[in-house]
Length: 435
View 1: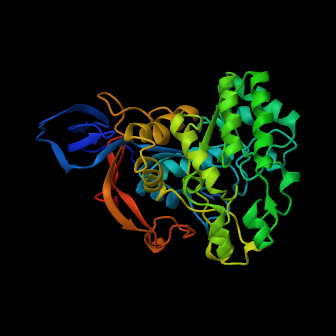
View 2 (view 1 turned 180 degrees about the vertical axis):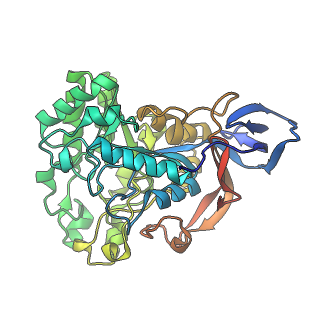
């Protein structure tokens, strides 16, 4: 029996600034937003003091690795859902590179049910594009789409669908149920043995470079394929200036393409590789300051549609190794909103309404999620995040809800703190603590 996801009582949120606007009250009852105004009263509602807090629609992540089934030592659906709730998320898309791979209706339904049982966050499975991520044979796309999980996003993330004909077939197939192929843009022949961004720093360190063109070539190819087929394409974790330029060009042509950027690619650069600390080893690699600036501009002007965490938990032994042997990836669910505030809001590149769009509304629309990514308005599902933008906190990996501790922000002072997360009117986080 799964944990109930419906609110058992009413809540009156007092003084919150909806998407950074004027302070007001939000009445939540029976899992929906019952009223919005000033000076609201409700004797049956539990009051929540939100004076000075930002109210955002519950965040939605298009790109989360929850590792279950198969790698429960790094993360489980339950622990990842708790981490998501702590980060202000009410829904996440769980990537398919599990063991076994989520390439059948049975596996995606298992992940979906585990998310329901956790009760902290809705978990929407992502189906694999190819069987076993082999890049050769299409997976059971239709069966996954028709399953109880209603899969609409398909990705071999971690691997690129490098075969152009196979990519075309996948784009054609998902049109039947309004699905989207989320591509991990990495030309495999151009990145054999690559360890970090190809450039001045890789030359200096003597590490095999990962050229920007390996990402950009796949994005350009797939935008053209998408236009030809008339389907939907989503580009995962964009990391280069050239990728932003290609996406801008493709959207100008009318291609139905969307894209995401990770918080770490909005902040960190390849110069951190000089520490030889594998905590900074990630796929795609950290790029240059020029790339970071272009990514921020692309997110601000809508060329990049949303922020996605690419939350990639690993056990300690997988990261505490020599750089060449260490696993790629960083956890990000519990720090994403703070990094976006630091890089985009505090710099004046986005306002809070923009954050609501890039971290909730747009990803829910791309993933075709119902009940999420909705504005905070009367009659809408009460998926709400309360955020203290004026707070400061030092990142302590030991305090994280995730089972893994591979954060690149250890010891860093960041702005903001999630105070409460409501999932359909039920608090999953309240006063900064898991419920």
